[in-house]
Image (cartoon, rainbow, N blue to C red; front, side, top):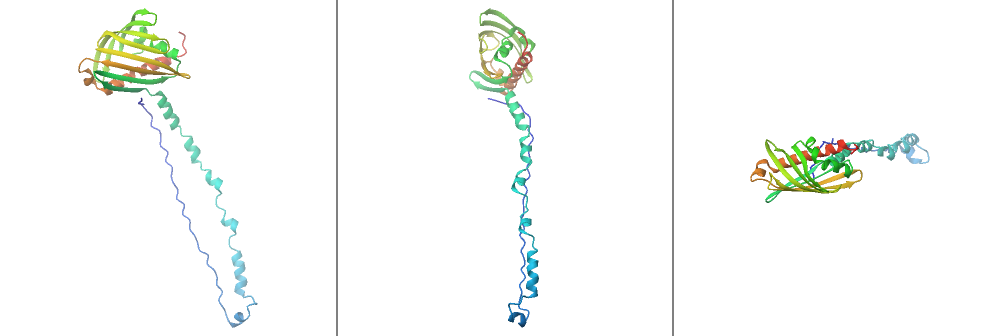
Length: 258
């Protein structure tokens, strides 16, 4: 699952240079017979032959012609380390780690919601916030009241009231839920009575080193016409916003005494 909200990484533009090699021809001096005397005695060096030897020797020596930049110098292109230092990859990885993935789909007769996110806190620290029902309205803005009606070990009966907003629409809600807890691992809840026809939810906490991954699954059957009125996109945005508030509170309380 996913989603994930985001920053725009700058793109690197790498120019490609074209190298054109020009070959220059070397003109050769050809000595033709200047006269019968020179042609008759080949042992007598001609003056043109004497002058042509030094002229040919004066050509640039081989080392000079081969003095192109050496391979190590050409390979030391500073663009490679510059591209590696581009922080965009690290920024994208950090954004992906912070993303809250939400998936909403119709499953007749109701709506299935799945969500997943990570928080830099231990499972115990996340658990203390996610099961703090008496103080939940302080950080969950859609809740107006929340209280534990009954507690029997890890089985709770809670009552919550508030309003849910989807775009321009706002709906009041009130329900009583039965909650079953497996400390630091699992939260299951089921509506006993309330505004929805059916409401079931299951939240799991999975330790990932110094972080905790929260995995949520819910199934809801709303009053007739409500889902068609608000739309699945609105439900997805609202769900993501509620989990963002939950994560922010977990991080705020991290390290605080119980």
